[in-house]
Length: 435
Image (cartoon, rainbow, N blue to C red; front, side, top):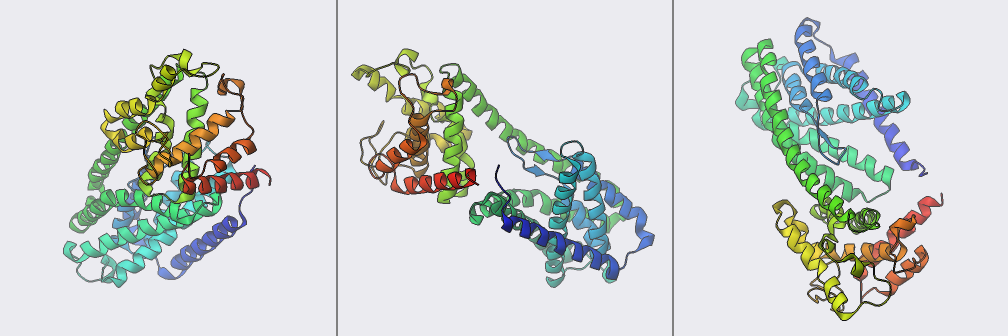
């Protein structure tokens, strides 16, 4: 079992302490308008339901909510202290209700407090940016118009979501012991998408309150539902993408007993290598899918050829060499998979030009294809832990033997950059398993 990194523990408790100091200081010295409690209760209900009705993205722990627009409107209408207090109560209540039974109580409390402190810090940084940019709240006593808050509102949204993304990325990098830049890139990608919904919704929420007071808060339910529906539509598009990959994977499994384990392991190793290399975010988001589908071109190839014991004939080998091109052809018919087509087609190419189907040389092979090539070869040499995961025509090598083979192939069969990253991944895993 992997031990929790000491740096992560220290970071977590630093976030705990900072969140506690900010919240208690705001409540102790900020002052709360008790006469506004009916409006604050409505905001609490909005935040509560926004949190317990998230849009969950398929095959991911990522959840989008409409919490931030409500929090922003609360900040503009009632100020910093009320925002922190009501948001904190809403997050605590929603987490205890929505996640009850999913985690042991101690872990649930830990996750709730961590997410709460992240949110408190993010709101604080965003509020400071809002004030310094000239933004006003109704508590200032001055007349606040929509035109006077648009730019500060957009800055608030950007600062809040970005701060939260950076805090979360730091936690993940320390906990998983992976490069910080990788998690920052991933989190900022989700942040950019979230801003497209949160920014306009936040402005609309603020306008409704400025124009109609407490009745405007009730009208927020309409844009709240519209925003959530927009997120749902985006999630459904991703769900269709995931279903396509799952269906192709299941179809592959009907042909060969070892396929399921092999595809999953190649996807996992490819993902780790790509992360170690710090490939672009787009590559990191798609490399697992390419690993799962890299052998889709073997659909329809005679099992007697794929599982043949002994040397393949020239005719058999010619058929085998067609599978990367066939796989690329299959995937090219699906628009949402077109990005991984060159990777699947090129996963048997070699830097020395002796690969197939196109005989590409070093510099012509997509780096993602080179990553899959190493992962595919390594797993083919070692096989899985179960007998059914192994090729019938080849005795599996030990992990050390397979690593030596990959190292030996650097520069000829495999891209040296990928081999270097692969060695680093294997060394790290050996270290972790030996702890």
